Amino acid sequence: MSTETVQSPAPTPSPELAVRERGAWSLTWHGVATVAKLELRQRLRSTKWYIGLALFFGIVGLVTFLTVMSTSGSAGIFGEESGRLVFDIVVFFVLLLGILVAPTLSSSAVNGDRKEGTLAILQVTLLTPAEIAIGKLLAAWTAALAFLVVSLPFLIVGIIQGKLSISAVLVTILLLAFVLAVVVSLGLGFSSLVPKTSSSAVLTYLSVASLTVISLIVFALSVTLVTQTEEVRVWTVPEEAYSWNGEGQEPEWQCEWTTQEDMVIHTERTWWLLAVNPFVIVADAMPEQKVAIDDEYGYSPTGIMDAIRYGVREARMGPTMEQDYCWGHDETASPIQQRDPDRTPVWPWGLGVLTLLGAGSLVVAVRRLSIPVGKLPRGTRIA
Image (tube, rainbow, N blue to C red):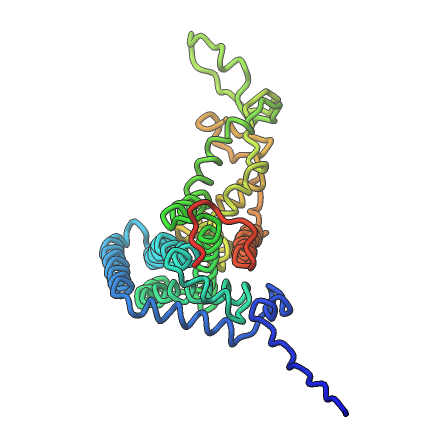
């Protein structure tokens, strides 16, 4: 009597096992697009997002109109630079509003879904943590770019007013889009770290404030820390001029070189605090405008961005060890040669720091979305 052995079918691997076999960082465009579409559909159903776009459009339009009206009647003050001034103000205002709006688009992407119990549904599917995180990041960035798109008509007004080249326009738009991507990535990272949406929003705004406002404050306060007394070479009147008692006819003092101790500010040690500022990055990356100066062609600030660029690069060069204190005493030209401005760009350093911050936030989000979860903060909902 023969017996037949019936083989049981092989067990179907669970979604969790399949995800583990793919790895947390396994990516497919289908998975990323699926998550991004789900996120965008939720935003499109919300009227608040459309109201935000309308308010953004109106505020940028109002500022552009007021700027054009203010500079159009001030040709005597700004001259040909009034058009460039319009472009600079519009770009900076769009950047300011963008980094204020962007945190709200991603600071609740993870903890908000976890609170509503919808995040666990995505985690038990075949989607990997990287696909979920990048999909949410892509959706938030797309929503942020929508605010940039509605401001394009006013950027075009600034472009026409400033008579800018196509390269300058492309650089500006790409950098604005990149900064928005970094901000939404920071919001995504904090959203995966803390359980409350309000806390993640506050942390994201603090990070943005640290890069923009606080970096300037720290740079200003650090001046006293990098100031020291050193011997410098000074072009000044002789010491007898300061001790002259005023009796008789004032002699004609001749300026001369001397060495004396003076306060020297070493900004070359703290310039990097300015390099991480998004406004400095955008301004420094703008192509320089060549203008005529005394029948010779050279580079000269023609707007707010140019002034920021030259200021930051001058800070990186540090102080000069020769000073001219002979103003009003000698009609001859100063013997101190004006040093050439630094042409080395600053923006790659700031762009590198922002890239590390954005990539680090994405890595944190992927790690926090990985399953099984080892430990969750107290009060965090799983499903």
